[in-house]
Picture (tube, rainbow, N blue to C red):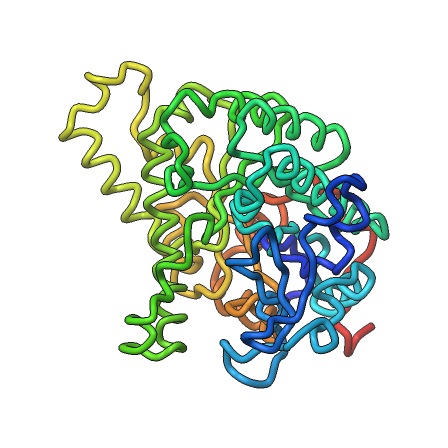
Length: 394
């Protein structure tokens, strides 16, 4: 086992019950997101707005749960403390040699879309701001070792730009944005409508994350599909589909002109894996050339793969083939490592084993890039102040 510190580019916080009630203005308290026990399912859920799409607390924190997903803790009493408590998270990080973790949400959705259900723009914005403030409160135990990713009120690009600027000044290190805004009645990525967000991201230097599942997930779990496949097979099929859905979002981004107009903007495809990237880039270049895109869009001075090489990153976790065999096609400078802790597909109990299996035969320089240096440069993470010793050597 190698004993190098690692930066984990994708983890989640199971938000504590007072995340919003402790931070929203008094006038919004009666409509704040809140934890309730679902009468239909019997477990604790987050209710937002009318409660039509509750977020089960236990399903956001199944790391170590003894039964296969979708079995999960029924509420906070059964959730591992490292899912919601920062000190417990640091202890877990020390155990497996992770120096820093990027932090993503659950309740607001992986693109912040859940707040749309509140229907009140002022309350929606207040909820986004309260979550962003919560993140900074949560990491106070050791800000060096956490990478807070700010939420955006993406339905309002001007307000989003202001929030990005506020969060950058306060200490946030990245931006969460949906890769499929059109699924929520918003313009497509190529629309100039979004330029305030891209401009703010570029000027603050914060990278923009397209996290899987930032579109609408409910259609994947239709009654017809569950009956035909079984719930567990539907979950497995959905997971694979979400990885590839991010491929479509990247193709959208690469052909949108956004990267050409904002050459210092950086974008990360989070939790989607990297194995599909060589095909995506080759296909995008081929389609770009035979379609004569540059003749119609003169702002394109490079091929899609070249914009990717300049501005886009991918994340991997369970893959073993891709990090061993495909880095020359992707670029070792454009890959980050993640665990997705504590979600259903996360690495848990096998983190170091998966790292070593995926990087078998790679030189130390490549290991350092994927496991630490790329993310450290992207997010401004300080170098560790001590050597990591595995528990049996500590």
